[in-house]
Length: 419
Ligand SMILES: *Cc1c(COP(=O)(O)O)cnc(C)c1O
Image (cartoon, rainbow, N blue to C red; front, side, top):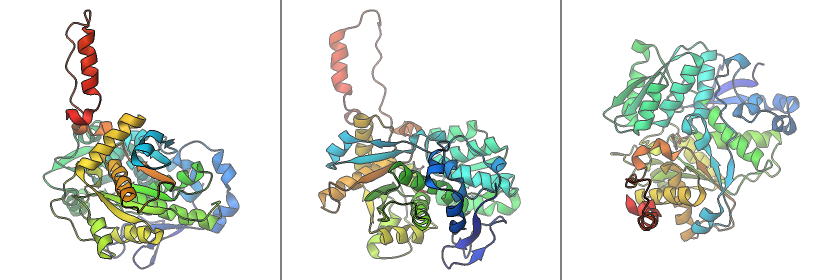
């Protein structure tokens, strides 16, 4: 192997940095990976990629790992792109596709970024990793660190979903619950660098998690016959996935691999109670102010301040999309409707996307015939706190009272009403 990476580039001012060394930020802002796309074009084509194994590593020429044996993998990627006709009808769309990331290792798309970041960290000689997380990134880091034989430290808000806490512990990480938000966890990880000798894998504080999440955009293009949809709805916290996909589309276009170079409109969806990107978008700003008292049941997008704010906002604006906010009740409502109508385990974060679609359609800002893709970034069963209460127990299994059983079926029908 050996990669096609040429250098790392500072997103804020284009400064070039050496990719063969462990790098973090430049001027306190993120780095992106640049490749020799001409060399990639003459080495591989779409047909060869299509014939490869169904994981994100099928795009290896467009990824930064140098040596194959350094890849730390659990088979992540190539998640299904599922048609959701009943949900589409209820929303008022002609067609809706859901890219279902709930089926990835540890039940969320965080596995893509952490598979890549842990692979590169290992390749560059790191032995001890640390991460601040709202939940899902902690489980994913724990899994890939275990797989790589590296040590992992995970810091989460004390009120993070309990599955994320137990999962990271079970997967062998040192887990700490902090009385505060993800920003407080991030401050601890940053402060401990010297004394604890760990490498900080925070969102966008190293360049490789984006490259993992970029594969969502590569897969989407391939699954649509190397075409892109009209609109993409993405639940946005730190924004790695949105930034990564936008980068993927540019690389695919430069490679000449797209059948049609029309880019999708990117919609960054947030909760109305933690909406820094939406506020900055509405105000016409390139940087977002930190939101105080950030609260939302969609814990993965409970990110009051994003270090890559300008990268998210640039991509959204360049695409002709928008930043949208969803009320808590609405995002839970649409999460439940997707589960009930389609059998897809949709997380509350993706509920914010569905709610934003409903809102934009109502306002006439999205047309019913737009080809629309929603990223379901995680599995709802990781949020035990949001599951409906269990039904009453049947005491005598040998003597079922059918009238009572039927009565219970009608009560259970919509669990939204039972919570
Ligand atoms: C982390 C997370 C997000 C936000 O992802 P970013 O790429 O950091 O914006 C959305 N949904 C879920 C389920 C998450 O875990």
